[in-house]
Amino acid sequence: MIRHNAIGIDFGTSYSCVGVYLNGKVEIIPNDHGNRTTPSFVAFGDSQRLIGEDAKNQVTRNPSNTIFGTKRLLCRSFADPTVQADMKHWPFKVCAMGSRSVVQVEYKGLFKILTPEEICSMILQKMKESAETFLGTTVNYAVISVPITFNSSQRQAIRDAAALAGLSVLYLINGTSAAAITYGLDRVFPEDHNVLIFNLGGGHCQVSVVTIEDNIFEIKAVAGDMCLGGEDFDNRLVSHFVEEFERKHNKDLTTNPRALLRLRNACEQAKRALSTSTQAPIEIDCLFEGIDFYTNITRARFEELCDDLFRSIIYPVEGCLRDSKMDKSQIHEIVLVGGSSRIPKIQKLLSDLFSGKELNKSVDPNEAAAYGSAVWAAILSGGFRR
Image (cartoon, rainbow, N blue to C red; front, side, top):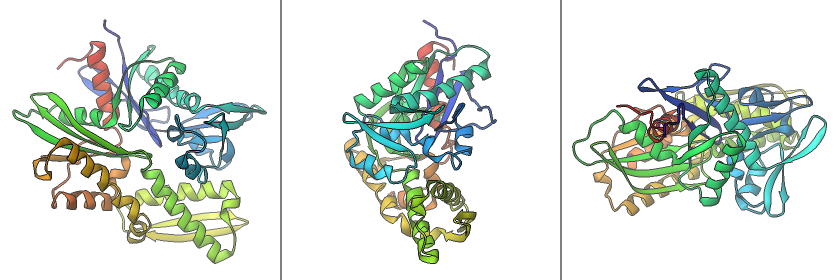
């Protein structure tokens, strides 16, 4: 049965991306701001609900009702140490409903309890709407990429969220598998070609070893860390500057959610800048009680603050190699995926692990999972043509 216009969605912790296979190629679909990735943010106000960039852009004005990082809450109990640790960095209220973690917001003057699945469905609905605007027709089917570390309950939660968004899930594809399709689609390998896909996004680290031969992809092993990603690096920077502000001004920023979010946004921008520069400024006017905060961070200091987190990426890589029963010398390519894979120290650690091997940066790290998901959606829906 042909299901026209099945889309591929990379539903990320920090950003999401959607693509469609059209006229023999994948089109990554821009959102209503013209951007090819959309922040995974949902905001609730007195009169309306905002999703994506509009939600993120107003976060400092409405911190307690702007929700992000929701994927890390899926099927996790309120007592889960990861949830408790993340809550210290979130301005919105996470509470328990039975043993489940849920979110409390104020919307149109009323307090509402929302499950992580409901929040996730709103982001998926935004991806669906972007695709429908681009295609000029209704979209009902999708392939959605998920972390390889997601268990069956978390995968079902994504299916439930998609159903709430009006989408039937053709397949839940592992993010690294989708990236492998992106890497290998237009390449011909007459004999076994072993690829290590390293995917470091906003909330998860995922690794796969894939063997490709004559357009046949065989997953040899997978590994990952559910609690390691770009948002954890942001948290380290935020904690560092909270301490610096208190040391300089004897003021505790953690008492003010709005100030903390403004600092967080500045830290995320600085982190990105440090991938191409050796130093980045932090400049925030009237951060707290009329005090301006002007400082900077060097790449070396950033690497020092995150040293243990950066080095922990090695464990899933080594575990994946061990499970695949392959030696490092048997890996032909190391393909980088996910925004945080751009961090120079991460790249150096990976290269050093493989004796200085050059890393493959041929795929767009922000779009690779959506691209591969769109190809798989076309294959499953009968629309793929080589």
